[in-house]
Image (cartoon, rainbow, N blue to C red; front, top):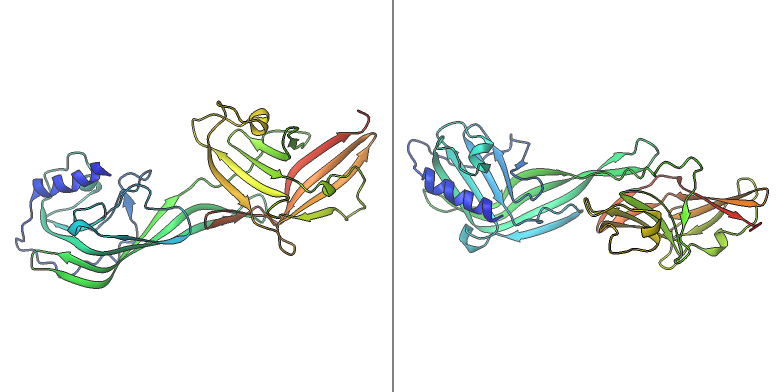
Length: 329
């Protein structure tokens, strides 16, 4: 963030401001639908470009939030603080290099600059969903951030100008959608922990678990045809969690899911199953018997996973896996 603040100041000092023959009455970027970031990982400097104009939004890191919500940030320090909105007009074609380059090109030159000295930056963030290819569930692929500056005052060469509302536009971020594709397991088995009440299935980068499963679901009795046992997700029973590993911190294994150690991966995100209601948020178990082995097939019915204000659907019938119990042992 400090890097981009310095770049803005450096470009201003290098190019200077000169009214010349250019007179700008209003800032109009309505025809520019795409916003870009100099660094999509930090989103500290977001910009929109026209042929000879640039509109810049500078924020501290992590203020573009990938979660549904409404966020407000005040423009402080008379436009020289952590939150800045700057408009520039150039004497030639402007490119991303003029905005993001460590050493901005000497041309084109800034002919006019407006700096927002007061106002409130508001960001309405909304998740972008897509239907999952494998079932009728959904996955989050990104977020649309609608940016408006309210009660903004621009300091411009001809004097201050105040607007009740200025629409900066939208900026989209992308996120990796949950694949929930379990590791290759031809038997279709899920796993259980002997030391904690946890049933799970996993891949190296995530696991999906049921904590404190209702003991009435796993009874060694064959269920009648089309009559599975059913029990809802509650705050104390059948708790569902989807946890992901932070990149480059390790991988999940059967052992470290049951007993975390110092070498276990860092959990980056935790999504929680919504409480069951009606036919939604249900754990369903069908039990069969072959020889002395009972097989409990565990299905999550219409389960939604939530984190913060965001959520996505696993699908109407999501197979977690099978638990086998050999009664001969």
